Image 1 (cartoon, one colour):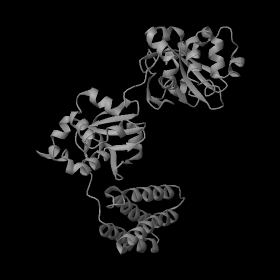
Image 2 (image 1 turned 30 degrees about the vertical axis):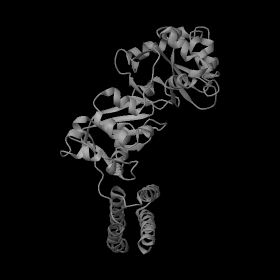
Image 3 (image 1 turned 180 degrees about the vertical axis):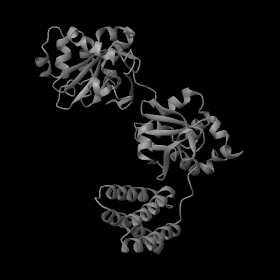
Image 4 (image 1 turned 135 degrees about the vertical axis):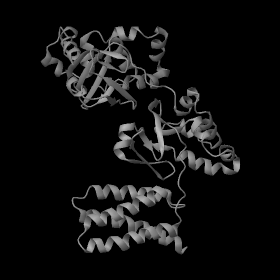
Length: 391
């Protein structure tokens, strides 16, 4: 904190020719131009077409590298970034230096990380004698602008540039996973725009499977089973560990959910331990796990109908007796059981209904309304199941 206070005082040196009041009336771009020591940054912002975005009404926080910071880069690399053909790469680097909202030094002091506009996470270390963002030193703070705040850093931050498959190949410990993704035809998907979050089993994790399992899964006739297993390891979006734990579960691309939480050994996904977390890639994030996640067998329509009917048989008497909270617990458990297992041929429908039902239930004021919201979701599933069973 002492370093932050000292660093904050440097603001006046950086903006010796600016009055605070007038600086606050200027946009982030105008303030950077007026400072005189962000010439390369300003040129890069113009080349990337980000002037309007950084001059609008949305509040933003910019970790701004000085001209000296840019001089640390290889001159050929910098020149290449400013060429029209590399605008996307330049835009990714610049937005990696921007965080949504006005985050002052005092607010950031209590944070360990922040998600950038580019999508990847910035690691904040502000509690020691040398405050830093990633590996960049923070040299000045709280330069207030009309549409946000600027903090000055001494090194340009470069986001991860390799996608999920490229990162996995480069790590050298995911050979089986890479081979499986190739056999399943998912390399193109996982290398696409995304973003995705992958719970990635190591080679050692695959080696724990019964002898012959991997070889069998790689056979052409077992491709769909392999696809299902791999999709069970992937969720849509870039989800970091704290966000995953807060959610408690996540819907996979297979249409079935995995449970996420903490145990004595650390972060867990189902029964697998996360041995390394938050590995950023250009199109998502990887969490490394020590066991392969095997999706549970999907429920048959008749089994799912039985689960839902049992919930109704137990929930209605509880509701009628005034035990609305108990009814909610019964309905919620049934909905989660069906959602986790999935129903053969209806995984996506189940996920959609379950998600909307849980959202509606969470937004209700009392247990009575929550019970009715859950019952409507159950009835929607039963209706769809009934249509399928009568065909």
